Length: 209
Image (cartoon, rainbow, N blue to C red; front, side, top):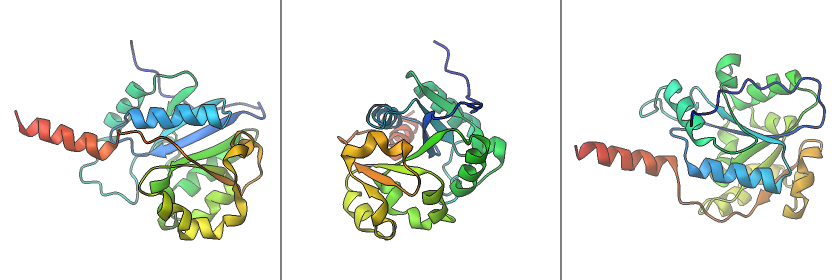
């Protein structure tokens, strides 16, 4: 089966479409990305989830980062689920930071209800992201548990600053309809896949030949 085509996100003038945004390097994409996307579709009542493959994560070294085309292809290969799209949006917009990407996207798609999806590990260091408070005022956020980072994430600077905007897990399906800032932390059974482990295994296998 051929991989799905790269998605060119445009919802037209339709209003109320609930779209989850999962950004990242996808270096490489793996079953963990698919798992969190399926959970987001189910638990947040989303219509679609878009994987936004970043040309280069500003917080990660370019060393060891696979070429963009390779990472995009990896995402396409793994995005085999209904209502799941792979996008090169950031590359086409020329944006480097999430705050800028979301500003451009929400202006282009004013009728959509976007939810930024992230793991507890990323949420724990969100205060290192460029203009990070703007993300909270642009879209609502769903944070998925990822041991052992959960305690650090929920006790950190970001969670403290926006503690008033936190919603209960039981309100998750209504999150997309909330006006930002609003966020929810969702407990999640741990998935064993991780990009770093996959790269390490690939490196070990490569060294054996």
